[in-house]
Length: 420
Image (cartoon, rainbow, N blue to C red; front, side):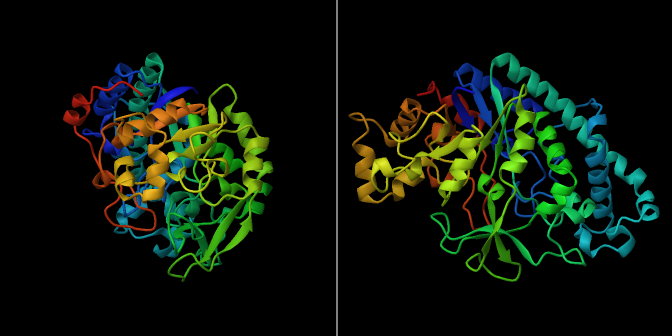
């Protein structure tokens, strides 16, 4: 995993299809990029976010489909659960599973049997997605481009996984959570972030020998060369927020499985790819030590690098290390031009001290990323196109006007620049 890559979700392409993805892959190849990072491929929630999906395994069929269907025997367990869940939701006006009639809510075999036929189209959708994805992955390998996937650490309460495996999550006797996942106040949000996704019962996962997690990671390495674990610190400890609270201020930390789970998951990457830890936010030293102990790459984000002294800031270009992947920004940041336009004068002066004469800030930030000691430099497509904050992908802590940015083929064709 070396070189320069681009962060662009499939929904940001002008044409959300296999044809569009193959055309973008050609664009990357022509400009010498060696990695393409995407957001989760799972179906989004009602706000368009793929980070609170109704499935930890299923792909969103709208992303791409093939006319052919690929055999998915290895995925039989989760595929059956997903197809039944999707079919039942369709038949119940897309209401969440915990409002369904009791026999369906509790998965009585006789009740599920009546939906076997209705579930088949949902199975075929997943098979056609995998057939299309196989073509994309094969072409990416020919082009020497690594595909980087994203695995949200938590999933939605209303999901096929929670419906099928209630015992693996922190739920009451009615299948409802008393606490949900989030993060405390930080530089993304003054009130913290209340995600609303359910929390794991780690002891239950331990007692089944981490079977669900093994299956999840196997699925990811069936799709990607590199897997990024979003909110890696949740494996060390997670912020539990009372379900009725408006924000995340009154949350508290719960201990995670840490080394024990990583010792199970990391061997699955050997011979297949690599696991990348998203270790952003207010991170205690113990989380960094956990990552380093398992020789995993972490992340640095250039937007965070120009406050405080460089030697104390792990995101400053001179502080970035070889066991990190550097980004100008992520899907949760403003675009670099949007960030620059709102940056305070002191931080701007720090950036300008590192720019070449007459070098534009966005171009300079990308150059600094490439010149750092990072193992890989990744740029959001918006930065390569020099777009302002109107092209931002997501603003954490908000639920409106996110996840909907798309480029045009003209945008891409007019961008003649090779990687910095």
